[in-house]
Picture 1 (tube, rainbow, N blue to C red):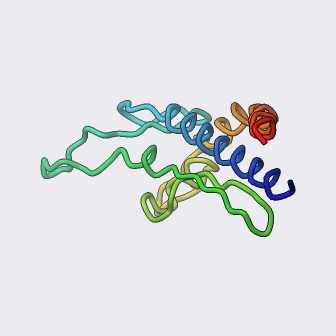
Picture 2 (picture 1 turned 90 degrees about the horizontal axis):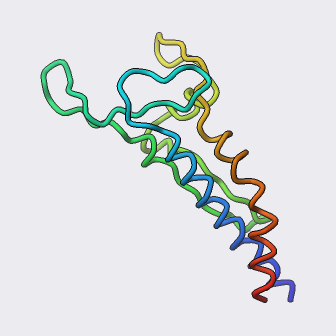
Length: 131
């Protein structure tokens, strides 16, 4: 029974990770210019470089990943992959400097977690009821 209860907890965390990721991705809008400080950042998919070539942008929403680690105790990791967007996610979430530029916080992960964390007890109860 302990293994099934642990698996139910892992499954509930996996679902929570999915919900938080979806909420964070939905909060990042494709709009011109920077977002206002304190609001989720904008993504810019349709820009050209100074030389007129398409710029590879719009990666922030796509970089948000989630995964459940089972050891030492089950927990879920959710956030932008540094392999895709470098430190941009952290700077946007918390504010800070990147190069010579300073940025005010434009949180997108913390509000998504705050929005979805209340779902965890219901998700866990649902998974436990299936045992």
